[in-house]
Amino acid sequence: MGKTRTPYPAEFRAQMVELVKAGRTPQELAREFEPTAQTITNWVAQADRDVGCVMTG
Image (cartoon, rainbow, N blue to C red; front, side):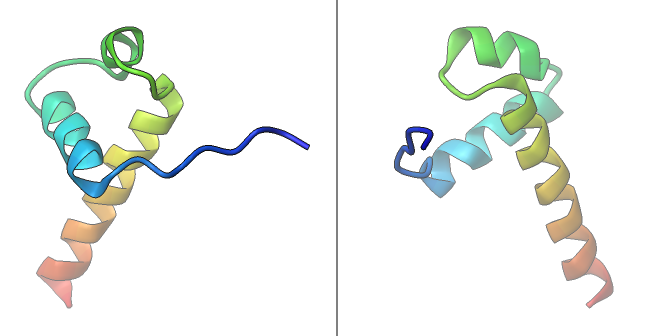
């Protein structure tokens, strides 16, 4: 079985999303911080979906 880790705190995920929206790339952030670029991309996509639900719901 693969190793598991504690989920990243919501505040950290939100900070990564804000950095991407400010112009940083997930690849840059992945080199600087621990999550992979794909993980950061997923967080951005989820944040966009969450905002869409708030705006329409």
